[in-house]
Length: 144
Image (cartoon, rainbow, N blue to C red; front, side, top):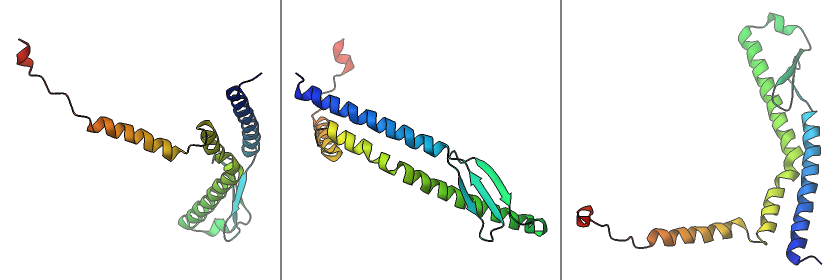
């Protein structure tokens, strides 16, 4: 017969295993994905890997040949920024559910006590230690 404590530990371990499996699946999906962004004029498309590495830059027209370098550079930077923003949003969406788990897990370990309650308790202990009277300093010459 298991104790209530052992039952709780088993339940928490089961939750951890389930969370680990879900996270592994999300990571696999995330790592195999790409994100693309198209420039406003639809001339350039940039594709990024999840790491942020540029996988491809594709020119849909040859207008870039007649562009000033600064203009082409501005279009590329703007399109890269858009792709990075999409990648960030995709990561938030994919890992959003996973982000709540540490908080829920911590609260279950603390028996429902929230972190602010625990922080206040620790702060009060340190406050008592700070305000505790200091022992009188001894004069090193008195020891002779």
